[in-house]
Length: 80
Image (cartoon, rainbow, N blue to C red; front, side):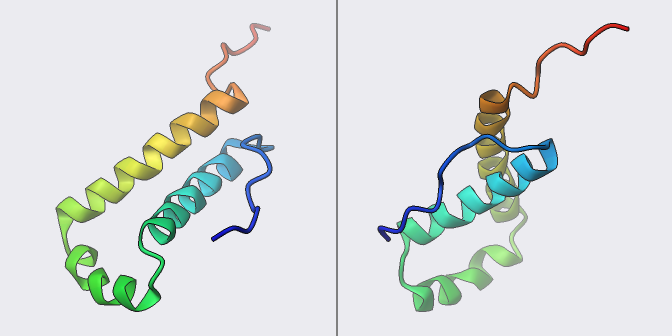
């Protein structure tokens, strides 16, 4: 995969940041295993696995952490 699709980690909202984190996670899997037939074959192994789903959620969370840091989502709220 040599297409350039990720221009920035900056997003307008945390929701968009979370969606970008999911995209990063999914693309990471496709880069690691580029054969769609193998991905389809392996999916039943993790789709019904609590451990597999938790692991997938952890990958999304780490990616969201990175995006949140890039967007300064954890800045202190302004006091009014």
